[in-house]
Amino acid sequence: MRLCAIALAVLLILPATGRGEDAPFYAGVERLAVAADVPFDTLVWYPTETTESPSQVGSFLLPAGPGAKLAAGRFPIVLLSHGGGQRGGNPLILSGLSAALARQGFVVVAPFHGTAALALRPLEIRLALDAVLDDPRFGPHVDPNRLGMLGFSLGGAVTLELAGAVPDWDHFAAYCADHPDDAMSCDHAPGGPRRTGRPIAPSPLPLKAIVLLDPFAVPFQRAGLTGVTLAVLLFRPDRSALPAEGNAQALAAALPHPPRYETVAGGHFVFTDVCAPVLLAAEPELCRDPPDVDRATVHPGVEAKIAAFFRDSL
Image (cartoon, rainbow, N blue to C red; front, side):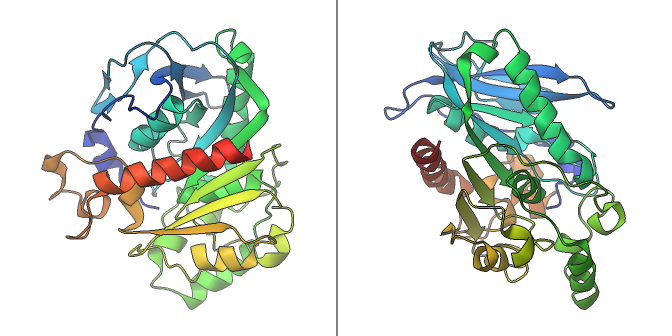
């Protein structure tokens, strides 16, 4: 789950190649301010007929047309919750996936959680969704009755809660006491899940399907997953440092309905966008893949499966 703030400050998101033959749209992107006790921004990726013109945002290059005109029609919504290390995280690291979904006719709502504790992230998702629904530009073009969600790493826990799961923090504390070497599960959320907990469980959203990318799932036990009855697509990298037996595999076994379970080559961060070459030596955990894995070749298959899953489920 750790997305080092230093890496995020200098990470370069490489642009996708744009609309392919199998994509009905180009990708547009807009950044909206969301009102909250602690205001934050959200990215909105959407279908457009306008040719993409990638834009630079700090050290990030967004593979989409900023401010492009929305395509005609009403489109399903995919909420996106990114991962986060002890210093937070950033949705820009999943720009390629977000743009790919926009090209396939989805509106992707991806808030900047930053250093928000896990306890606050479901609320940020809800506020970001409300901001899009209330926005005069986006509201008429989205269909809230076709609502899905995608979560990477820590974002997987956010997604599960909004799908109806209830975490068991006593189990989580016991797991971490028994697995002192599992730092990725136990110590890499902002503030640490053991120290933040959750005083009030969030009410679920009317989601129809969720996608989980190597999710942080230790707190979720069978009894707390009975409310997750929707379609689930779960991806697990075969060499992830996030232990499968406490996370992806345990979750798959505990869900009331077996998820569609996909294994891909690579480590935990294989789903994130390709790092600039200069970062490979400085941030190997975030940027470097095993010698036989090229994340740029992994992404198209993952993106196609996610788009097809949401198309069939929403």
